[in-house]
Length: 188
Image 1 (cartoon, one colour):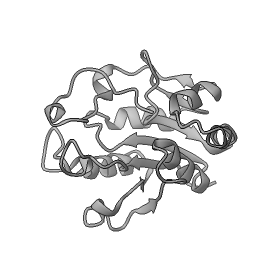
Image 2: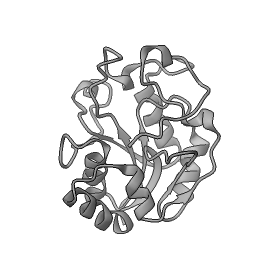
Image 3: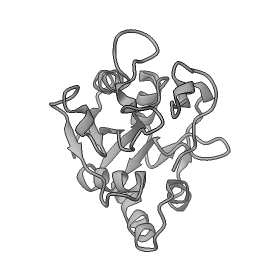
Image 4: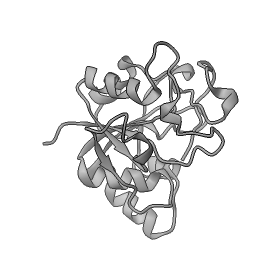
């Protein structure tokens, strides 16, 4: 079996931010958000891979495997499909989540099945997926024109991973940069 991947979702245009989100500086230190996630993934024994349009990150992480959305233009579900067609087990995280830490990545890695934090909504881009459990439902969703990761997590019977909200913060707008408290986006 292949090593568990840390699928770092870097897709999206970042039009509100004016630059790729993964190149923003992390909360502490000189690392970018992407560099921090790559380091943390390696620290906990996950193999970091970039998922989505990784061209803006070529200089930061030239050695990492890149996986395109499959298909492109359908949001994160396309990235998840591309990732799970190449890796049987993956922890995924969005590149704009500055408070994800090694402890959370280790908890996701040590889990079994499909696991994600859930408040009012799932946090599908801070989760653990297993290809055999997810790909059949994902393929059916795409065939039906459904692109919601929320619905996908419901369909596969994902388990809830208890996580404090501050670890799920994401930076979607310029005013979010530097924010380390609050709730995650519940995207997808």
